[in-house]
Length: 112
Length: 445
Image 1 (cartoon, chains in turn blue, yellow):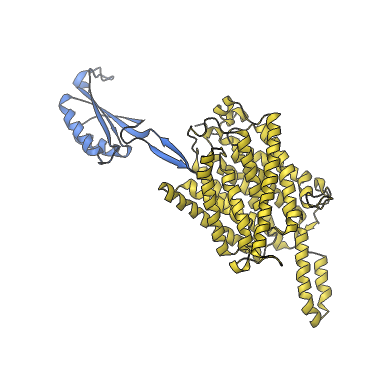
Image 2 (cartoon, each protein chain N blue to C red):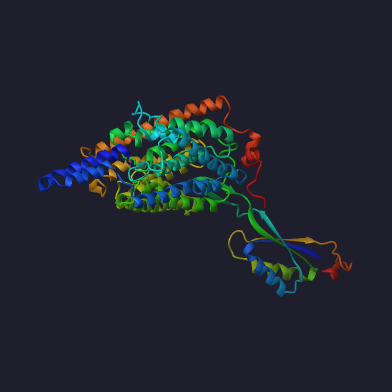
């Protein structure tokens, strides 16, 4: 199993959620985050006083999937979140040791 | 603003001009005219307008200016500036009634410099007493609202770091030793009025006066902790824009009300106020757009205030096209002062009281002498004045205000700094004035 964590532009969340639903992903976790990458921050100007805002608001989506689904998930997120402009975000893939469904006690792929 | 004595002179002169043809035609009209001059009657039209104008000028301070400033500070200091403006409203109202009005608006033994004591505690200001064609109580209260907003303007310079107690004492001394004498010089028949300076609604008395005092306060108090390295962006520009909009609306009372009558000059004052402000708002917006690449909300609102300031002294004499020029120039110079010069010099006039009110005030006061000329669409200069001599008188009135207000404000501030202290502690400043001075928070979310 893998944990796919994608940092995306906030306005792309609905598109990503739809694309993941289309390929059969049954659950995602969404977190509001801030950070910077190559896009850096932005500057704000108040009567000539310039402030550099380092951290931009982003959305982090986490999806736990079976190994077989990983490529499809990555493709779906990439396609849905891409604008082609700087700041589209990144996708991180981690090995996932265990998953437990709290209600039933199921573990592993059954709990996904 | 015409002083009573100026008004009398004007009326006497116009009557004299009228008399010559009248004498030739019929002597019968003469007693009627003289009688009308002797017993000025209350005009209900003028009174109705001045009641409204007085409310509008109070509306400029609370809530207009208060909100304008409240949005510009950090969220931990939002209540402190609202509180300062509100407390100033209370203190100045009482001081004006107890001695301010008398010392400003009556004749005294040293009349060139300060008025007299005849109307201390408003003695003689009764239900029946008149000032021109309006009740004297109304004239006094109208001027009270000016005595409120002028000190309140200074709050922006020392925002986020001054002790509330020191602020109250400073403002009390400042009204007494700075505002009242300058009011008397310009509007009470003092030496600047004698020279023939034009200041219809308060370019010198209000804006240059508050602006230079604010600059002194910023210099004596010193920079806010962390300035300019730490980001201190305005915490709520929505409040600031609402405040600026209220200032714009209220300013019709300030400028058109300064005619003290509901007449043609008041109508034109309203027109030129609107046009200068519109020109100034757009000037600042485009200046920033060209400089930074984007037009900003804070920029257009600040530009509007600069335009209101610049047209203030000229609002009774400039014509509509002169107003556009005054608004443009006022905003351009205020823009350079607030967004460039301040950062080069490094002083922390936190909310740009000098940069906006001082600088646009100076530009407006000087251009008043230019655009009062009939050849530029103005109301015309006094007999014997040329554009050059009028501008020179304007420059003298500006310099006198800068030197006197700047000097006395500096002395008051230095004395208070050496005795009771002006600033909160570093810890209190970091915590914010809302908690440290008032035990309250602006936002409990």
